[in-house]
Image 1 (cartoon, rainbow, N blue to C red):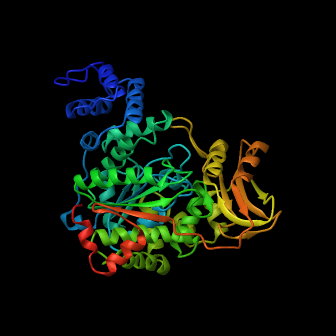
Image 2: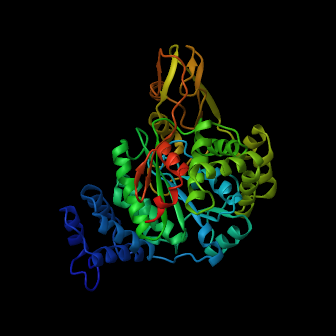
Image 3: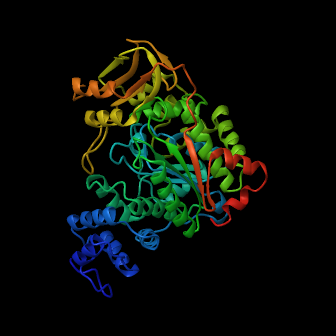
Length: 480
């Protein structure tokens, strides 16, 4: 168990020590580590030690690329019809609070003719996982074989699934350990985890939503940009047309946080309604993918096409079809996608208690801090403290105010949904501190997307839009 294998020249403790001391691992050493993870040849403590060594000492770009490639070939790689090649696209987010973008985006892209084989994950740390949200829908089955995925893509155009045992099995092991070893923010581990799954999907275009801010894995724009550059570089070297967008994650995305509540808000978005910030991020990310795969001449044109699918019901129809294709009974899928909000609650369920908290003073909402809200919800059962732990899909929060809005003292600003344990006074205080008010005039909140990272460098969204208006946009993707 302590030997990496022929040709590596080191025991596993020696490899851990080597990375712990800041040395560079050779390709064959990384290969043997990944193979041992996949085959069960390492103790969990050894894997955790290596993850921590990588977290503390980092990896250079060549190590990160090798780690990603070896994780890809640790299992099978999906194969698709040649006619789909240009249209195979996907999106990934580094995680945030209230981030339910994948739920409306995948069907919207399918309604535009794309094929979206989205392999998603569960919650890490205080961030919610797409799979956890979808599993709040009765009957939804995240476990689909590659043959089943192909069938769903043929019929519907999109699926959202978990990792099968034979698809990037090394990442399946390491992903679960990162959450319980405080290594979820490691740049090379994030890069390899995300891109190994996307490379195994055999997508041609990938857009990455890299979050920054107080509730993101990376709090500063600079550190998020470094991660985005790593992802775009490695993705491009893997043959995937890769673009990253840096989006703000200080406050929750949308107005609802918590698994079943976020499904409700995603349905609003699929009806062309719901919070403006969610709609804007869905259309911008989707528009970028349509541009990347040649289905739109610019991000703006692509965004308009995505918005049209939300407005005309075609994206909602794809979502309903995806639910049924992945195990949801037809009547349940129909009630969710065409019913009233009360009918949707009857399908998803409602927590035992709902409690509204009042604003402590008059003022204009400067921001709503996402992290304190997420941590309280985590304590109430919405998140995990160890791998495989069950969660309560009904725990969540509804924001009753928006940034820039004027509120009066005593008016409710948040509604907490909880079962057991009950909301404590300390948690109420923590939540109250998340609402930041000032005496300024009401204002419109700024765009979530701060920057776009391309193979040729970074742009603001406004700069990219201007360049695309001048007809030079495709050159920006030439090295992808």
